[in-house]
Length: 129
Image (cartoon, rainbow, N blue to C red; front, side, top):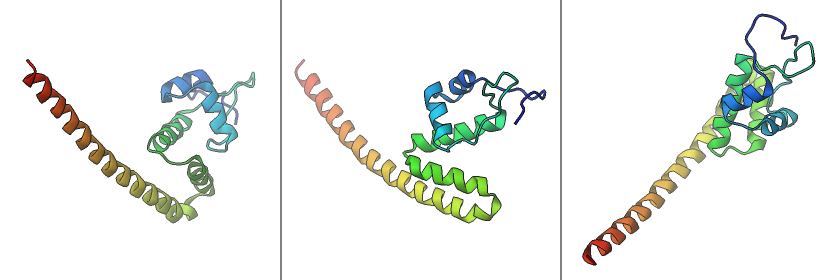
């Protein structure tokens, strides 16, 4: 893809900063097939379009919610195949959402334990005064 058009593009460093990744991670995502080959400028340097950055934001959200890289790779493959994979992509996201909801419920229970201990220590400190 020739990015010499007037579309505003970002360097690898700018794109990495925008989405909160390191340039190393961004290049690794590309090597792993999570990101389609990125356009280059006339000097051969990567140039990221707004669409590329949106895709990277999605990937960072998926990773932050604990989606395994293998599932992210599968999603990227399905997305590249087009609309005939909509059902498979939805199913992948539904399964991941179920895992996220289970983890959130676990974290809520863990938070209750922390709150209980904090309150116990606070009461003990107040009684010691």
